Length: 164
Image (tube, rainbow, N blue to C red; front, top):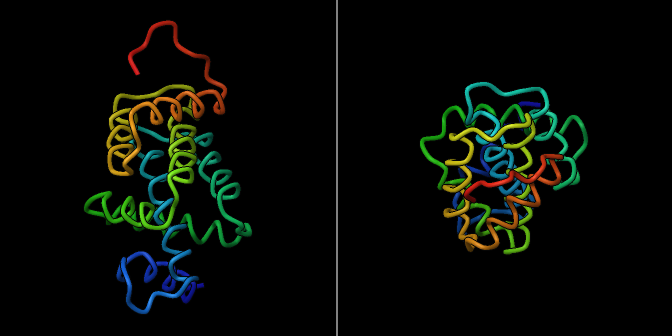
């Protein structure tokens, strides 16, 4: 297990461009970056609920073809990496390099689903999501649409009057 965690960690901390990165290492790096961002959204409000954690697990299952043991290891490493990370740029830049625009939009929808999983959107979650949208170079209109899709997927009704 430690060899796998070390491989995943090396994938995210290794060189972002060129170099001796393998396709598997690049894929693991993208998976870890996505998982860290999901964890960051989950941890961004005062407490995180089992519904948020469940949404993170389901997202990883939907987004990547991973077994339950791989998801557990990825979450363990993502949580540790998230606690140690000085910023989000390392992770968003990995997604910018590894994902197409459509994949990044889908990832933003997943992030919104995590933010809404507990039934509310805190100011901290909203702030983090805006920051992530900017770092992932998501156009404002697409960002708002992703928010609406994420909210709907989380089963949250559209607010009567809310600023997006």
